[in-house]
Picture 1: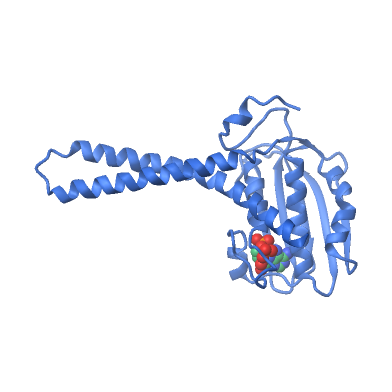
Picture 2 (picture 1 turned 120 degrees about the vertical axis):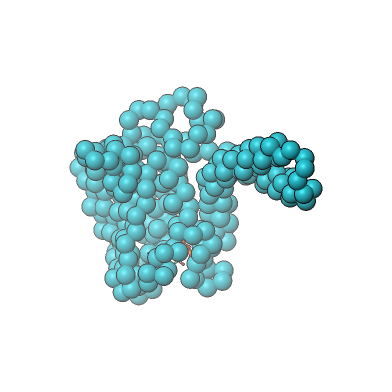
Length: 261
Ligand code: ADP
């Protein structure tokens, strides 16, 4: 079962990451291919023939890369997120038992759920998955036991842009903090990198946090992280308040015409 969960997490994280990365890469490749084309056309013909060959090779390479990113995008589209209005408090309460089981008996869960919390724009299953990933990390960081705090709060729009550099608007914060071993600045700098793990082979995939990151970014939110060795870790997920519109950061055609639920 552990293996299955790991495999599932892996595929999901890869799907989400590849979607975001492929999208950005496609845009960059379009620039490369277009510029090479222009350069090629500007050549009068009197140049060193090798220059033309280099340009053609580069263009061919870029075109192949574009085919590859196209495939990745197609793969990621199969794992479309379905954003809907989600009540994070309800979601957290509904997960209490699952979280306790994931964390084990030696970890106490403390929830501080804000009253009147706004619904967020997110895929409920993905948000659950993200919280579960954070809980698994917290468990691994607290081999002797400890406390996992989950806190929710409304972050109203302020005049000068959104929190954490996000566009202005209302957000909801979900903060997950543990009393574990914490992270060195070096580990923290790389923690969100796909496949980065400090865990033993077969224990960590290095994909948990990149799944969280991919999901939150695709939902139009942001993840911030605080930690120091011996001081535990605190992850804050910011998700946009549900406004009744399908506001999806990446242009993902299949979603745009989707009916609102
Ligand atoms: P994995 O858990 O499979 O290693 P993640 O992407 O979830 O992959 O985490 C990457 C690394 O970040 C972990 O190996 C660990 O070193 C560090 N990390 C993540 N969460 C925590 C935490 N709550 N406390 C301490 N270290 C953490």
